[in-house]
Image (cartoon, rainbow, N blue to C red):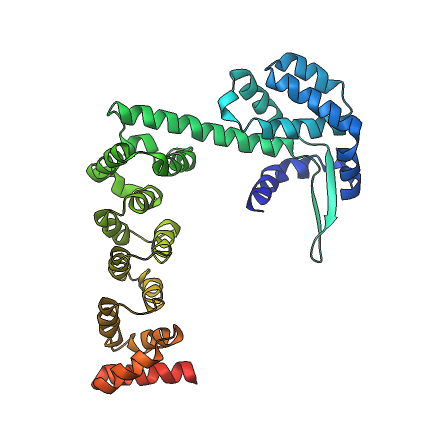
Length: 332
């Protein structure tokens, strides 16, 4: 669904500009067209020419097809190009050309109380998607080559202020899980030694390195940096079973970050049974005059009322009051 929305967003400007020349079909029209045996055989013919990399013959053949059939064929070919093992300069040029075109046929269907109009065959959006993936693949190849030759300067290669930063970040972040230990250790050392990485606009690479190494030093650095979706996701992954003693310590360490603290405490309180070191940590949190009542309520909501009552009976002052108020808050 996310990809469909992205592709629709890619095509929206051109749809608005060319709406007067568009032809609107129903979903049934499109389904009937795709099921037509004659249409299937012509798509197979276009696919064969594409696989043979005979792009000139392919263009001539596509131009001989009815427009709707041509748009369907272009969509199939764009998706087929996702096999990067067979990518050629000719195919790449072909994808660039069709990514700049505007589909003529639209399909209108009813959603939940509203109507949605999208390209019947969104070949331009598909081609853009493939070209982005291909660019990321080339960037990954470049990063590996530079890493192998000890020539990778992360802060320069990532080019924080460049227009292609998002693609470069995606390339290096998705590359991390594929690296062997030697290459991964080398990349970690590069990150930690590059003082300019402190200016990185997000935690994408740092979170990926921490998650794939379980390195406490990297996690500590991640918790110290400004919180974003990457650091939050890294914290949330720590509660995915099996939860180790190291994961518990990392969640406890994350509470030093004010933005991550509540999420980390909820995750720790969700452990069942509660390890002793977690009980000790949570007891100190309950002793906080300002937040203790809310933390006790969270612990109660996670199913640890019995432990709280035992702690209340053994305690006095702030802890006892916060536990009592927290339980009342939950029980009404």
